Amino acid sequence: MSKRQRAAARRATIRDARMDDVEAIHALVTEFSRQEFMLPRSRSELYDSLRDFEVAEVGGEVVGCAALSIVWEGMAEIQSLAVRDGYQRRGIGRRLVKACLAEARRLGALKVFVLTAVPAFFERMRFSYVPRETLPHKIWSDCVKCVKFPHCNELALAIDLPPPRARARRGAGDRGGA
Ligand SMILES: CC(C)(COP(=O)(O)OP(=O)(O)OC[C@H]1O[C@@H](n2cnc3c(N)ncnc32)[C@H](O)[C@@H]1OP(=O)(O)O)[C@@H](O)C(=O)NCCC(=O)NCCS
Image (cartoon, rainbow, N blue to C red; front, side, top):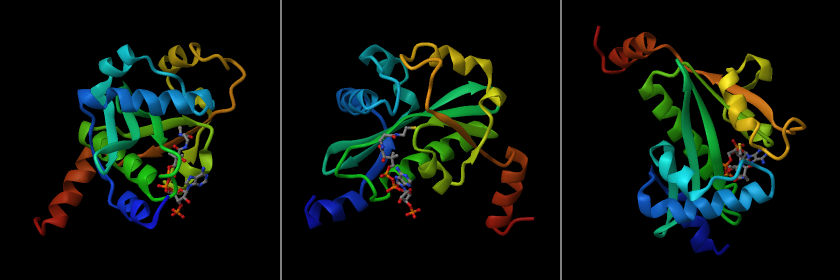
């Protein structure tokens, strides 16, 4: 990666995914699912869940993606987080996770979890380990589709978000209100 590309990566735009991003998201997810970092997603699944996705764009090209999937009351999951080789370790993954957490807060989620083979990255994002058994049974419907099931190397991590009322109070404080 050239100096100019490194500088551009630092200025990546994080935005909601659009229909014309599906091919790029599909390429990223397919590449990293081959390396067993995530589940593969068909184009059909990506169109179905496109509104869950954020993408990172550098110079008009999609170089990263992440999805926030609503699981159950108060709970959401980060899925399909990927940053293209050559653009990693430039803060793009962090910004994608932050965008997912902001969306989770907006939706009223109290807990966001992830199943991951890179727990150290999520620890940097302030996620903590949780026993898999504490996660809703619904997530197993995805797990059973995985070729690795039931011998999986992924660990569960989660982050708690403040309840909406506490957020509203904090927001009022931030604006200098009562
Ligand atoms: C994991 C991944 C998304 C991280 O994205 P990234 O853009 O490289 O991460 P960032 O540059 O934003 O890193 C943020 C912090 O995490 C650290 N970090 C990044 N990747 C890490 C890893 N694999 N292990 C430990 N720490 C890591 C960085 O050093 C940085 O630390 P800092 O807070 O001290 O600055 C990216 O490496 C990737 O796409 N990996 C392959 C697919 C994958 O594993 N996806 C996760 C599926 S759940």
